[in-house]
Image (cartoon, rainbow, N blue to C red; front, top):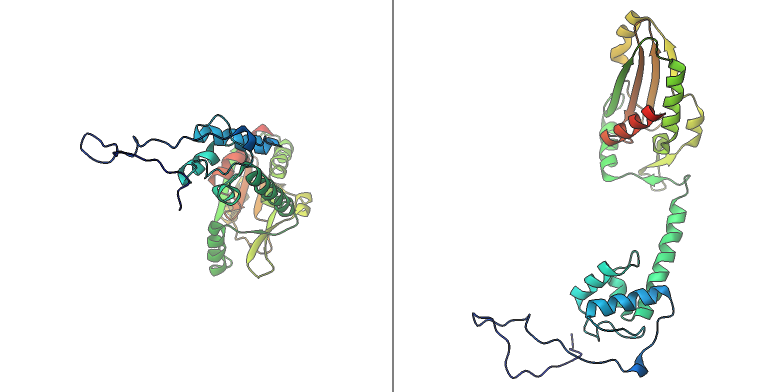
Length: 273
């Protein structure tokens, strides 16, 4: 909190109403001697030097210059972060490093650590924690075992001469393009519910074709949306039902992995397939 520069003023600038005008206060002016200038050694250092110069309205900034000693503040720190092209640069790095050289080093180490963590987290065999919304759905399902809650059933009707085998192939192609549907709910190391990818489920029959009469279909129609056992079942069911009157596609996905946006995406992909 100790000022780096002092400016002597005979009077303070004031607005027309007599209040102190901070905008009219003169900015400290000082030059950086060429002897103190250190050129940036990397693209990250150059990006920081150039952005600092622009933010502080200076001709150039040395790679060893202290941003706050040059007149930087918490406000200009935010401006620096927003204008600098370095991805994931944050204000904490500016405060900690202060000079472009040190900030660049801190930033590079943080990026490398984040990328390494992302590579570890990208392991498809590693359980993924549920979101807060998913946790709420899970809790409700645990309170109502054996009930068809949070189902998202859709029944599509096609003309009777629709090629059911072609429709089946399109459904399986679209579903396999979305691995998130092949998620199983399991307890993690601490016993909390988590999701794990089950690629073996994609090798099973995903959408069987059932031949039926129209009367038999009408009799079983209300029972199509059956309860999911979210700790054991695959979290979607699909079936093509072929009768003398129509070809129908039944799709039912559990809400813990599926919502309205998912439906739009899936059915758009199905149409393309």
